[in-house]
Length: 407
Length: 112
Image (tube, rainbow over all chains, first blue to last red; front, side):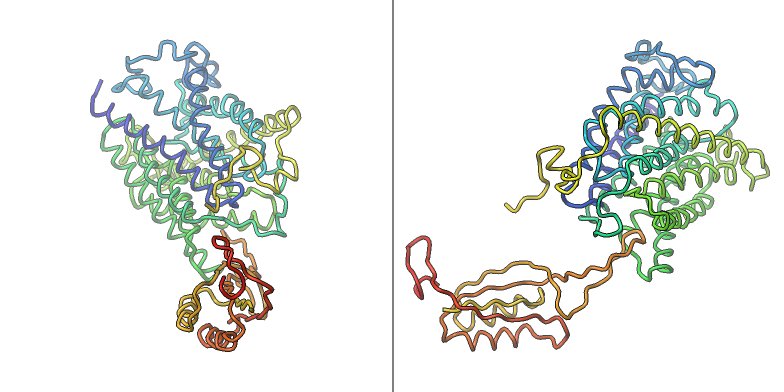
């Protein structure tokens, strides 16, 4: 046991926890005023729901004793056997429960990311059911594949430092299923579906950026030089992501927007996540640039296809997840992290192939899994709010509240 | 009694108010409004999605006054709210049947 490592991972867990309310504000500012509380709630309440799921069976399914490389067993149900003794693989220098609570924060924010795809039109109760099922049957197995002791992607040699597979690509792909099944918002293409409070969105982006240091640097699971290099790579990619995005805006619409700067920063941070512990600062800068430009183009495509991924989960986390996981295969360097691998630019072409397998497997499993879960919840409970509720807004119809009053 | 209603550019509110109080007007009501006239709206862009916003933000002031003050008040508003650009707004003068001060019950001229 190492006190420095333990202190660092606990602090990182608290940082990652703050990302979920940060995301709530990031999304909340982008919806219309009548839906701001409903949108914030869809992120915030997952701190409650998914944390409970995690300690009961989620952690065990993700990290528990391996079954065929696919899923952890239920031997650790209710954290049985997950105590203060370090786990030799997951974190030899920190208490096992510290690793567990750190990972809990990742489990919470991932389904919250998906909520951007169906913003402004999902009923609250069915949303909770969907999130619980998705965490259990999509997120937990994916985490096991990638980070579980014996997971098949890990054994294959796929590299994902902090969550390209289970967090970003998976939420982005789930968003595709959700946008297809939920359909467009009323008034899509005819009414102004504009953000109601961009300062709130920028504040949320700031909290996300702050928390991301815990997300990526914390994934070193030690207060070490590796944590330091992941911290630097994270920050650098956030900055170049923001710059690349506003450069694209300048080229295509003639103005740089604040929403664009915030979106680009989040795109850069999301994209560098899987690579953050394997690449140097200049590689991270290039990854951020690719993220800002690539995610911007992804959203331009969406506007052409016309499907209503309302807050661009696909464009940012899906596109960013793919770019980031491929970037590991290009830019990874053993000089940064000896326990990683070299990428194509450092003389090893095979890593790119392994990363591609991880991407394809994630896309297929998450798309199918999310599709089936959404269909079932829709059939049993009905996902979408009735038309008149959509007109009145989620705040009033789902929660009996309004965010802004005149006195 | 008349009510003078003026739709003006929001940033002109202060100078219009100063002009009217200098005339001896002792109260007015201000509302943030949106609308369109000859002035075109503007473009807004959010993550590449463009919206043509037709309703332009304006400020509406309403002042009830004695008939005799109306020509001066209209002149002051016209002078203070003008930029010379399209979209400076409009002034409407409408008759008012009565006015009642809620606290005291005074009516007519005494209530304004």
